[in-house]
Amino acid sequence: MASTSGCSDTEVPPPDPAEARPGGDATTSIIPFPALDKVTPNLPDDERPQFYAGRALAHQPWIKAPTITDARDGLGPIYNARGCLACHIRGGKSRMPDDSETPLFGPLVRMSRVLADPQLMAAAANSHAGVIPDPVYGDQLQTQSIALLHQLRQASPVAIAEQQQVAPEAYAYVKWHEQAFVYPDGRQITLRKPELDLRYVAYGEFDAATRFSLRNAPPIHGMGLLELIPQADLEALADPDDADGDGISGRQNRVWDARSQRWQAGRFGHKANRSNMDMIVASAFANDIGISNPLFPFQPCTEQQPLCQKQRNGNNSQGLELPDNLLRLVTNFTRNLGVPTRRNVDNADVRKGRPFFYTSGCAACHQPGYTTAASSAQPHLGNQRIWPYTDLLLHDMGPELADGRPDFAASGSEWRTAPLWGTGLMGQVNGSKQYLHDGRASSIEEAILWHGGEALAARQRFTHLSAAERRYLIQFVESL
Image (cartoon, rainbow, N blue to C red; front, side):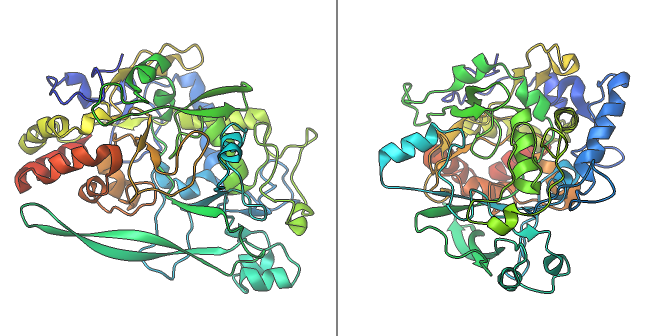
């Protein structure tokens, strides 16, 4: 069961020695260096060869078909990256450019149409895609292509399209806008907000109803443990109608699971639009790399992109570029990425910060602990006491963080509570300390100050702490 009784709970539970090992027996060391792509220490020895084979598939780049090998070809024809770990760098986040002239690579842009007709939007939420894609560009912007002119960076997407080669859909950049935030005690901090800047749009105009959402690739450690949090625990935390009147709802997304061919509760992705690891890994292969697989058998070319559809593929005899056995290899690699151990647990300032985390209301959504369910497929991940600090539920985060585009049952202002385990290591893992879905926050403090909607009361309690108390709270979060 979850360790706290509900989202309104601001009581401070006594420290549990088990908090020092957030992943239970799947907790990894940060010596000799912190990383989020380390194998769980308790993975049985006879399964380790498969883990490293899956890691190789996730790490090595895919290539254009046809080629001398039929095991790694079929890239694109349009795509965002050549491999999984190109975006999830060392298992961590991707890096959002700090300037306006570096194109996105790793972060990506999701798209869908938002229509005035509520019946059409309801039909979209109940469709297997969960959204209404742009008719020309689909539901994800593809900023790379297999065209030689693009690979050599010798022409823009528009020029490539004019030469009748398959072009990237556009190049994406970010413009940053700064704004000041002033604490009640007078201290001022500068926040920044991204504005998407699309250039060299190659396939004509976007639909007038298309909305865009900038996304930073999230870290991928501990996902096998999150998958085993009992569904009943998450349902117990949900309060979709705010029946307890604490201003915090929290609800589960309802998404299509292509593996089981059933509707399931969503628990992965920025908007909880994937139900399990099979779906999130398979969708990333199809949408990010352009690799067809059993769960997503189509590449990201739309009907309005005939040149894209005519390109050679890397299909096997079953008509897929990634057969199910290799898809499962990468999925199980991802399931078995461990969680780094807590740091500075006994530090005096960290210990001072723990009560402020609870009394400020952070734990209402960043639920601390669970015990994972037993698993016949991954028995070493089952029955573990874990501390991810998330409820995996959707919460309305207010207009400042809204992207304005629904995804299945998630509204345009709802986001899944991000797990906090390992969050203090992000900078050490790969240099990316960019928090929130679009990487706008460069520190835990900035991330807290962007919280609105259901989290507004918690943010206000944080801002009314003294400067020292705020620092203690942040140091506690950075220790998780």
